[in-house]
Length: 182
Image (cartoon, rainbow, N blue to C red):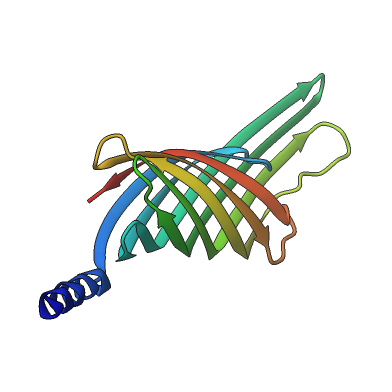
């Protein structure tokens, strides 16, 4: 009986120690607290199941934001086009508890921000330019696995930039998306 117990224990520990990879791709509508405020995001994620119900993953993500503003008052005409691209890599930990999968993560990224502003009328000149910066982020979220390969999710990312002229130094982003898991 001791030999049988030892064999089952060995097989359980061996199978639990084998990392099982799961790949996923996601797309989201993103809303952040600074201009430009709305955009889209995509991510690619590779999860490794180290112990039952807990996954550790690597996520590559990117976001695109663009907003155009027009203000006209008499002879004064302001046109501004803000565009932001960013991409990053992070570590993410997920706990699968039935249909719900909460997760947390941290990462580093790079953002490029372009502003094209023109002012017609008045003595004020436009403030055009571009800026780029490294950023760090922390994220929390939850996915709901109703259908095995499809996981809708909501997440919040808090980002801080290292240095910037045009971009805000800190802001939060909400993402509402769907993840396809393979």
